[in-house]
Length: 284
Image (tube, rainbow, N blue to C red; front, side):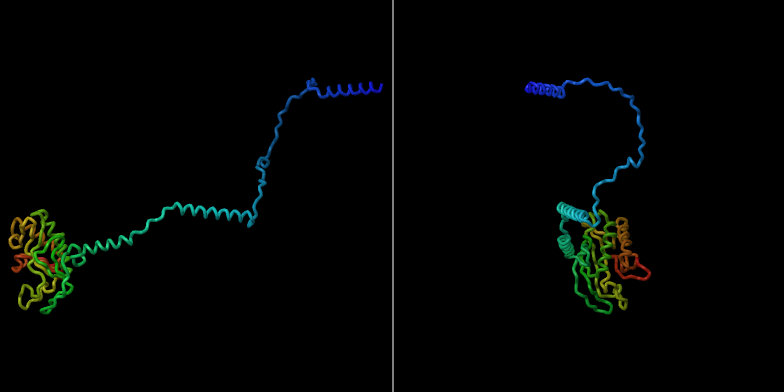
């Protein structure tokens, strides 16, 4: 009897458990739902503001600042190293090598020249002592050509006179002749240094020839072999205008310019000297 009661109890418990764990959906009890209402909530600006960050802030002078400083220093050093590695190295200066070459070219160009001008050819000469009071030439040169125009005989003069002659050839002789006869070939020099008085007159003042500051030109020789002489050409229709233009161009570079219009002593040549006067250049 007891066994039967226990068996009934177990069956009842099993049936109750199956009912509780059943997967079959249970019918829901109808629930009355009320219509939804719109709810408006007012929010202030302060509530919309972002919340304060909770990130920890480094202390001044603390370990965080020190670490940042060290990191920045390493970054700057690395950046500088990269910049130096890729930066183009400047080319070595060539001044030290160019200067000697330029000096050699200048020295070579000055060989055979005088008065520091490559276009004045000649050589230095020893001092010429005076044979009479007022004569003599110190620091003189013997000129053989100026600006590519030869002198038919060398001229012993000082450098001021040599430079004046070059200026006259460049600005007076060459432009006046132009291409006539193929251009200027040479100047016929008939006088240069000579210790004497003016016009060789006894008792007269010492000529500028006696000081190395004068020379006389009698003709302009052209490359085709022809010549324009002062004696025959000054009053001719063909060469007269050219010679007169040259004569005028000499006034300025030289202090004294004398030609056929000056006196009977200069009918066959131009006299040029570098004497200077208070009244200016004397041209006749």
